[in-house]
Length: 120
Image (cartoon, rainbow, N blue to C red; front, side, top):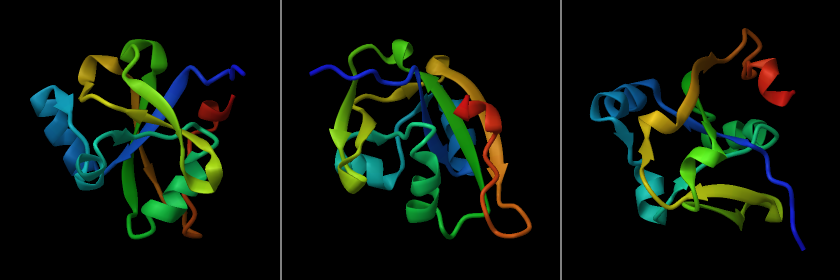
């Protein structure tokens, strides 16, 4: 059975950590990525749940957009939260693979403000 996967995937990163990755030219992942052996990504539809579950204590984050075609076969779709398939990168993320970077923040009501164009 085949499944159509989105062309774009997303990574949420603390802005200071992303600035360091930009200086190094590669993102190696956060502590939990290093522990798990892969870099966690989400689809656009999975982002709200990922924000709620893993980023409750943050007010600002970098939202990194990556085209799957730039990662070759290093991405594996694996079951995670709610048996949903999540993209996991089994390699470092080179800066050249990043198609866009946005800073996101919480709204006045405490909810995250995500760019509407990622859901199109």
